[in-house]
Length: 80
Image (spheres, rainbow, N blue to C red):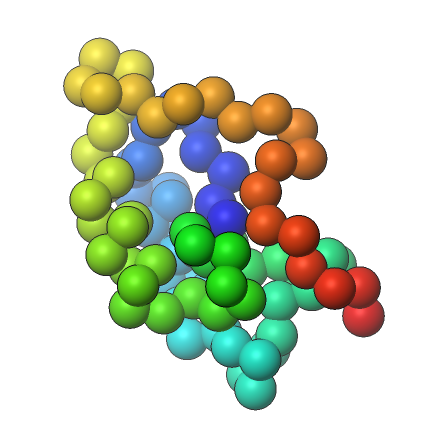
């Protein structure tokens, strides 16, 4: 899952694009190599995640800010 700063901006889009297409067969998500962009925590970065990302894109501290994330909050992946 992407770690947001309370906004969804261009830097988040870069991370998402770098991870798009990852799956159990192509660079699987692990606790060491997490999937930035696995919004639904299903172990891949695909179209479902893109829909969630697009619905959040443009949020900021003034315009419907993202909730703060706790350290360690996010998807849990198997270790390698």
